[in-house]
Length: 335
Image (cartoon, rainbow, N blue to C red; front, side, top):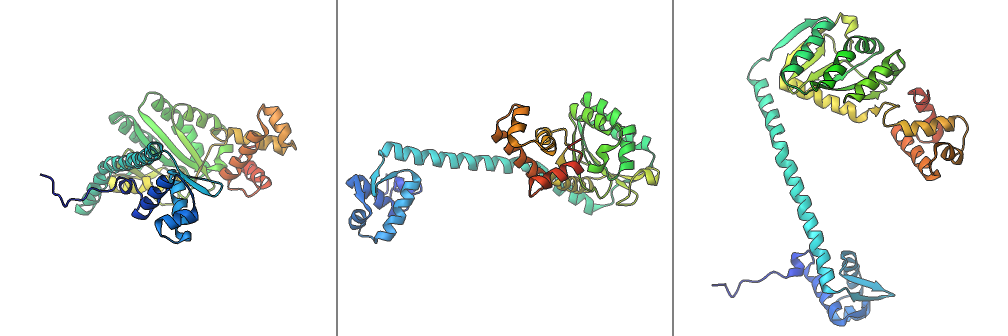
């Protein structure tokens, strides 16, 4: 038996209207069309306060304003809109909850990694030689494909060796579904002989590459629990005869992955990759063409040309088109 003293919630309050807004909306419904002054008299409230509340009702879409008068929308349409907005909010909240639930596994992995790190030493292998590095990566990829390999390349000499010794087999491994390579490298290395062709092939088989002005040190992570570090942080591999440490511990690999993602977020795509459309307009502008001439030559609208200029300035961190041209030339976009 229902409790006679139990109060049933006001449906409008359930949908987000407070009691004052509900009273005002009811007054608008009954008067159908009224001015602020008339509604203030009907609700016995100050005109200024009623005006603010009417603005809220207009924003919510349950009341319309026409030439200083307010009239209610049909209740079915008005309440339908409020219901739809509430359902959208509930759906978004549900998606957020799903995201939180989906992250639990990663959080548990980090917790376990920290506990294991505290509970005892982790294995560290001292290795030497490019062949050892290559064989280590390929061996792990074969055991758990497809393995994600993150690597930071700090200088031209390391990049030259990377292109000569590693890219070819790693391209083949990507083609076979064993490996996915993501690399951050200095922009100055893009002009080295053969680098562009090798990186283009790496991208074509599923790799990802971005550039920074300066990459502080070499390192790599293989999967979720293996990391490679140079014998001296900040150094490169060739200068130290490819001496490095191979650590098999999730806590170190996780920290280096976080560092990589930080660098990746500040890095920019290769100039011939996503920035291709932006590079086109910058190259033609460098030849002295105006926006209209660039649009005609590329078969674009002037609006699209200007949008690409804006994208280029944002991508390059430039404050003007001239600054964008200088930065694009420095990064090799105009060659």
